[in-house]
Each structure stands twice: as structure tokens, then as C-alpha cells.
Amino acid sequence: MGLAGYTVSGGGFMNYKISEVSKLTNIPIDSIRYFEKVGIVLPVRIGTYRYYSEEDIYTLCEYKKMRSFGMKMDEVKEFFKIGNMGDYARKFIEFQKKYDAIIKYYSALEKSTKQSITTIEAAEENIGRYKITKLPAKYYIDFYFEQKENSPLIRIWKKWVDDYYPLVEYIAVFEKNTFEKQLEERKSIIWANALDKDIVENLNIPIDRSVKLIPEQTAVYTVVVNRETPLLPKELFCELEIFLKENNLHISGDGIGKLISRIKNEEKGIRYIGLWIPVEAGVSSAYGETALCVESS
Image 1: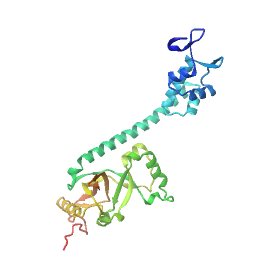
Image 2: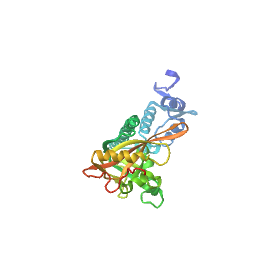
Image 3: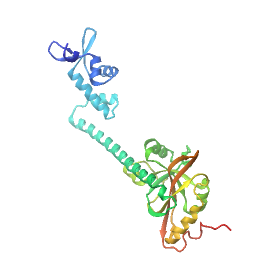
Image 4: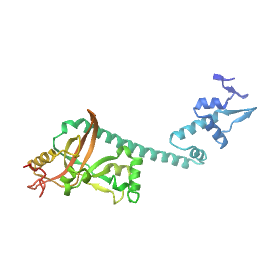
């Protein structure tokens, strides 16, 4: 017997039983037998035992490395058949492209998570406060309508939620022309899945002309707390109108609401909702022809 109980051949080289190889490489015995079957490792038979050489050990370690790149067993088999350095290099270029895409994805996820943390930490201090900020450009798909099997967007929607779910947002879209009605009536709101435009472009996430876009624009941002219906409190309208008039602003585009957090307090669900309302400067009436703040008689 050789070192650590392993078998030494007559020539002084180490030979290993299959159980020993499995222990050394942490590769299942069934996998080792598969690679023997397809001719990747070539043990010698002495009596009823198979013995594997050190070269076989190196080959199996290389197999394990290739598996760590995400290759399937059959792909590893083909990899070991590569006959020139050019093809060998091209295989590693493929690995690099794969990991570049993974790095981009997790970089986007890191950025998104940090933004969520910042929004959550500032949520309570932003309740009832109004400030001018930027609404980032977003692509969105109607959450209910577009899930119909005959929708041309069903393939894109499924790709979003299957492959990019941690980056997908649930938003409510409030169309400019029926802003008050939509804020007061849940059934009027467009519920949608959304992705930031820069994420879509950076990760090459599929879209087509049917996917709607909210462009980047200046917006009023505030946080509201929802304990029951309607979705947003009525006092929001008066507070918003006052802010817009004081700053000579008017609503200029479709707004969005996004769930910041959902907590449970005294058996009741409480939702913190971020609201972005696009605005422009330079008109005398904050809302054009319609005022949202109407005093009760």
C-alpha cells in the first residue's frame, strides 16, 4: 500500500480504486463510471478491481472545473474532444460572455436593491411631503390584460417574470386625462409590471413596440400610507394642488404608484406607496381645467 492507504503499482506510480478517486475529487462514483463508459478516463483492471492513474485524477479535476462553469456532462464530454488551441480559446471566450452577462445582472440587482433600501429608509419622513425629483424611464406591461393567452405580449411578459423577476416592479399607472378618477377608484387604475429603461437596455431584456414606455421626466414625489380603500387618501388631492400652485406647476404626464413596503399593524395591513406625478412649469392653473381640491359644502 502507498501513502494514506492508496495502492502503489509495481512501477512506483500511485493507482487508485474508484472509491478512493471519488473521495479525492468529491465526484460521485456514478459520474466516474459514466466517464469511464464514454472513454474520458481509462482505468486498468487488476482482478475484480478498477485502478485509476494520477492522469485520470487530473482529468476528473478538469471535468469538475468545467462543470463549475455550468457545462452539462455531455458538454464536458465534447469539450474533452477539442483538438486545437483556437477552439479551446473560443470555448473560454464563451464562458467569459456568459459571466459578463451574470455580472451585469447582479450589478443591476445591486443597484436596484440599494435604491429600494434608500426609499424604504426615507419612507416615513416623506409621508405628506412633496418634492421635485426625476421619474426614471420605465417600460411596463398591463399586469392583467396582457396575461391573456392571445396577447402578443405574453411571451415578453413571461420572459420578464421567468428570468428577471427580482428586477421587475409592480406599479399602478395613473393616466393624466383621468387622474382624479383613477386615484379614487381602484378599478380605473392600470396595474402593471415594469422595468427601468436603463436595466432593459443594459441587460438586453426583450421588448417590442407594444410594450408601453413612461419617459424620464420631472415629477413630484411623495409617500402615502394606505390602510383601506380608496387606494390613496382624498386629502392627497388638496395637498398636491396647493404644492403645484405654490410652485407654478401642472400635471404633464401619466403618474405611477409603487409599493414601498407592506407591514402588519394591529392585525391590519398597512402599505407605504411611493407616488410620482410628472409636472411642468409655466401655467396659471395647476390642473388645467380640472381642480382636484374641492371643498365640501
